[in-house]
Amino acid sequence: MSETKEFISLNQECVFNTYGRLPIMLVEGKGSRVTDSNGKTYLDFIAGIAACPLGHGNIGLADAIYAQAKKLIHVSNLFHIEPQIELAKLLTDNSFADKVFFCNSGAEANEGAIKLARKYFHDRGEHARFHVITMENSFHGRTLATLAATGQTKYRQGFEPPVEGFSHVPFGDLGALRNAMNPGTAAVLVEPIQGEGGVRMPSEGYLEGVRAICDETGALLIFDEVQTGMGRTGKLFAYENFGMTPDVMTLAKGIAGGFPMGALLATNRVANSFSPGNHASTFGGNPLACSAGLFVFNKIISEGFLRHVLEMGAYLGSRLDELKSRYDIIKDIRGLGLIRGIDLSIPGADVVTSMRDMGVLINCTADTVLRFIPPLIVNRTEMDEMLSALDVALDRAGGSQT
Image 1 (cartoon, rainbow, N blue to C red):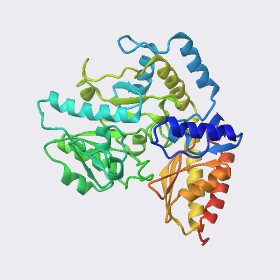
Image 2 (cartoon, helix red, strand yellow; image 1 turned 180 degrees about the vertical axis):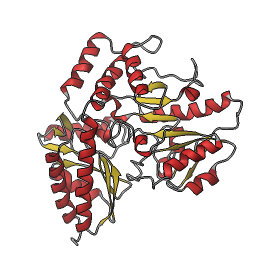
Image 3 (cartoon, rainbow, N blue to C red; image 1 turned 120 degrees about the vertical axis):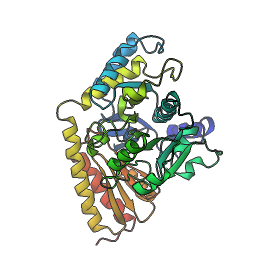
């Protein structure tokens, strides 16, 4: 215990104070469980914020990283990289896209998507067409451009003036989107499901309507699938749930099982606007990251994997609905597959703390939304364990049973 306190004190002394960290230090994990420096084990329903689809301590993933690390960790994109090419082929074979650009994070992928949209219209001689429309309550990253794209004022405070060329409309409102379109609109950037915004689902027909408006106006449609991609919804990519495709898509989080990686995918029509010198990333798509990505991708598309996600997601959704029928502090249950949220009528922080005390890790987003994004390998026994703790935590929070 004293050693943990010393490390936490050292963190406060030496590391930027940019995170509201929980008072524990995780040191080891296996499957859906993690262990802290004091030896306490937790069931993990955060999964590195949806970044660990295969859970923790996966031997196959560790072996893939080790085998590549022994051969070559990094060389830069001045050279052809075999695992990068193999991963790009897997991504394009299993998506709408023709080309992939690799980077290191979701923010970097979204930054690249914004640059690509502007370059696409610049190449067509439409130099004034750079405006990007995004949605209120969205989250696209913390670079200056992706902050401007993010539809939550709190993230931009203190970093003014915002990068120009962005506007925000209500998520789900096709009329507002149509009214915001203008001759300078280059793209619409949207999350199929708003994760950080509170696990907000699109209304029926909304994404299809966004696609239609983009087709009518010639604007590009960009899907931010940083949180929803890589099997999280029970489909490889969330757009598959809605019967349509974007022109551009961004990925990160789960793409390499927790190893830092992002990707920008696009059709040839759009991707061809990038040529040597337009965009780059020193570490993007290096041998180590892509070897991790290959292992993870092959697991996710293996027989039965996504079926398991669908089954566990349906089970979680039905059990959360049962809780909603019993607790009046639950306003809404939202989500798809293994990204689920409970919107409470009270702040969710105390529920998160109560569950942590019982050995279950979840988090709260948008102040009142409990978010459940476990490893995609989670099983029913673990699900029941989490739900039992949640039942107790909701009762302790003062939820009157109906």
